[in-house]
Image (tube, rainbow, N blue to C red; front, side, top):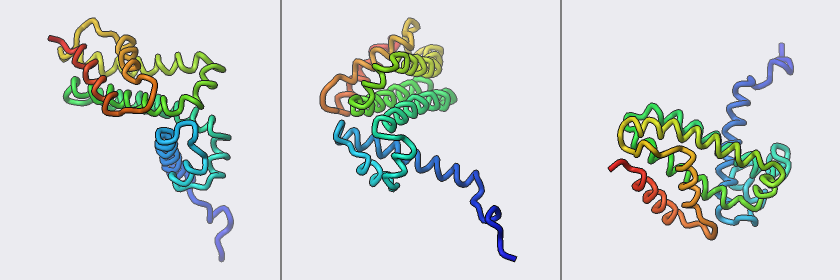
Length: 193
C-alpha cells in the first residue's frame, strides 16, 4: 500500500534544522555582502552567496531592511550566547579578550549595515538602547569573572567598556586591523597593574 501524503512529510525537526542552517548561511552572507558593498549590497548577491533563492529572502525578511534588522538581532543573540559559553572558560582573561574582539567584529558588520539600520533605530530608539544593554549584560558575565581572577581593574564597568569598544569602531571605511589594534589598546588599558 503506498504511503499517504502525511506519511511522506519530512519530520518537523529535520525541517527546522535545515531552516536554521539556511538562516545562518543567509546571515553570514548578508554580513559579508554588507561589509563589501555597504548600501549597495543587493538581495540577489546575498541570496547567491548564501546558496538560496532570492524569493527565500523576500519571503523570510520582506526586504533588505528587514534582513538587516534580523541580522542585527542575531548578532546581539550571538554576543549573549558567546558570553555564556565563555563564562565556563578556564582562563577568564582570555574569555574577556575573545568576547571583546567578537564585539569588535560585530561592530564592523553593523557599521557596514548602518544605511539599513539607521531608519530602524530612528523609528524605534529603544531598540538600539536595549541591544546595548543586552550586550553590556552579556559582557558583565565575562568581565566579572576577569575581575575576580584579578586580571582587570575592579572599577571597570561593563557599560563603560561597551562605550570604549564602540569608540574603536570609528566611522569611515572598514579597517579590521585598526579596529583590532584599538581593542587591544582598550583591553591593555583596563588590565590590572
